[in-house]
Every structure is written in structure tokens, then in C-alpha cells.
Image (cartoon, rainbow, N blue to C red; front, side, top):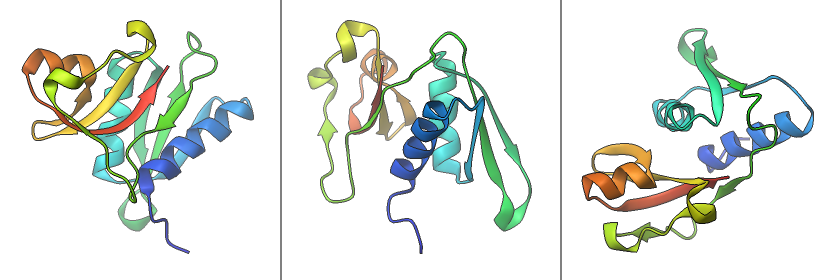
Length: 128
């Protein structure tokens, strides 16, 4: 059965892998998911993002950071309810200790980067 929301599927796989105390998580590859994982990696919440395989069997491998033993990954914008925010309405997540990941016209970035550049967009998820 095809997945209707690939980003939610990625976040759920990451949550389940952490609850099962796995060191890594594997999920089907897409450019959008790889950009999302690289943005999370730049923020330091995960340690490594790799791609393995070719063609239809290509996968993203996410290695978790020891610094953050339990990530709280929350999907904000869903297929049934999209959540958009302008640059002036971006609120800090967990008083600045967490991040919100946005899909903007300039690509996928954190809320802090979007505020610095001066763009808004669709809030994909929050991480704390």
C-alpha cells in the first residue's frame, strides 16, 4: 500500500527506531526527505545521513546522535491541513532549544535560518 504522507512516514520510522534503541533508521529515498534529514543534521540532532543503493531500492540511512537520546519529532503540516507561517509569525520552539523545519521558496531550512534570510513557508515539523 503506498504511503500518502512520506514525511510523516520518515518521522514515524525515526521515532520507532529510537524507541527500539536502534543506532540507525532506514527509509525509502526521496530528494525531499534527504534535504529534510540534512537540515536536521546541520542542527546537530542526528549525527549522519547516508544514501545507499540505486534506483528503486535507494534508501536513506540516518544515524542518531548520542547527544540527543530521545528526539521529539512532531509533524505540523499534514496533507489534510497545511500550516504556513510568514517570517514575522515564526515562533521559537521550546524557547529556542528546538527547531522548526520549513519548506520555503529558498529550499528546506530551519526557522532560525528562515527568519535570518527573511522568508516564510510551510512548517513541516518541529524537533526538540
